[in-house]
Image (cartoon, rainbow, N blue to C red; front, side, top):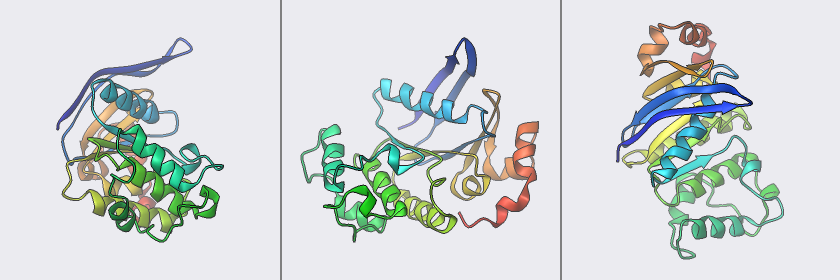
Length: 227
């Protein structure tokens, strides 16, 4: 299903932090929303999620840290049941085994609380919960910033492999150009609350037109990053 939003904007304390922005996201598409700190990329991501949900689309959100999604006092089994119930599914209806196997967390003990799992496994668990209902879009906001580079690379590789062939689109919100370069087909470059450049990933990386895109692509050390 093609996802369309028009005129997304946001004002905070009387100041416009996201100027009117419109987007079209196609099924299976992988987009990256990139920009420097304070550019408005996360604001755009949250506005996108809210608008699509209001339209009735299924949108899953993976936050920056698993701490934002998991209660340290509740078991992993509790979190999974809560996610199923939130989607209106009967307990055990979701393909938990398939998702855990795809994300390589099948060895995790669901009786434990989050701190009984490694950080990498916690984030993969959060991603698995996000994928329970086969959403129209999965939006990931700096999903690997709390992980070391090797675990981050493995996590994104597993997610990409799981999404292959599925209609779920992905929006990756990140300041990590190395991560975006390997994982998305189209880049949206943000600066000062504006969408200043948009195009195929390779085109923007090799032939950036705006100052914001040039600044991002100028630091070529991102090419060597594993994730």
